[in-house]
Image 1 (tube, rainbow, N blue to C red):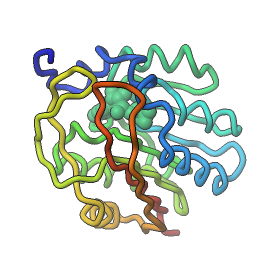
Image 2 (cartoon, rainbow, N blue to C red; image 1 turned 30 degrees about the vertical axis):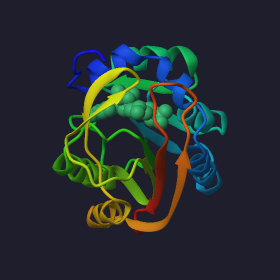
Image 3 (cartoon, helix red, strand yellow; image 1 turned 30 degrees about the horizontal axis):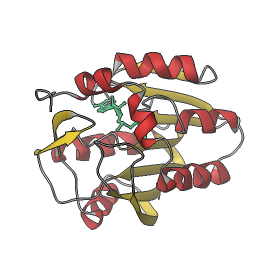
Image 4 (cartoon, helix red, strand yellow; image 1 turned 180 degrees about the vertical axis):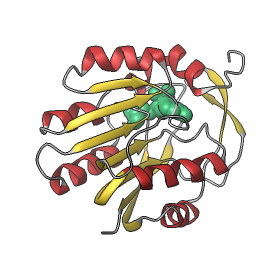
Length: 210
Ligand SMILES: C[S@@+](CC[C@H](N)C(=O)[O-])C[C@H]1O[C@@H](n2cnc3c(N)ncnc32)[C@H](O)[C@@H]1O
């Protein structure tokens, strides 16, 4: 195992397109995207937080005619996403620092983007996302649910530390941010590559009241 990579930018600059090779098809992500595409009005403004390689989220949402912006802290992921998904816009920025107009997004999705944040930072980012959504706007959150804080793990050959919540606790945090939770869906996922262990995935679907 390589030495510990402490930040998400360091980790994902090193992993690049290998992430998509290992985690390309995840049923819960596909379900989240179908749900969003079915619910959104034409040409909706969609923000993908931690947009990675741009696939599948930005690519599918843009192909459905939506105006997609992906934000990601990794310069390498943003470079790959711009190349792979010319129909969306990508910005290299940390979600903890990004500024956008309140109420200006019809949907926000965040797939596996918060595991290198502390619990307090995730709570703060959820409140920020709730503020960015327009009334009636949708939020789709996918993560690996677990009662872990700063746990050392190996991820695609890199040593990192991860933090998450059990599903119920995360649902509580989404509600506490001011969003109405409309459903959850859980599935076990087998990654396609060595170096990535089987894991549980949860989708929390929510909307902003109004
Ligand atoms: C596990 S990958 C998931 C990528 C994509 N959402 C997907 O599901 O295929 C997490 C992504 O979130 C980004 N990320 C992690 N922490 C972030 C932060 N604080 N701000 C913005 N992006 C972040 C990483 O650089 C990485 O590209």
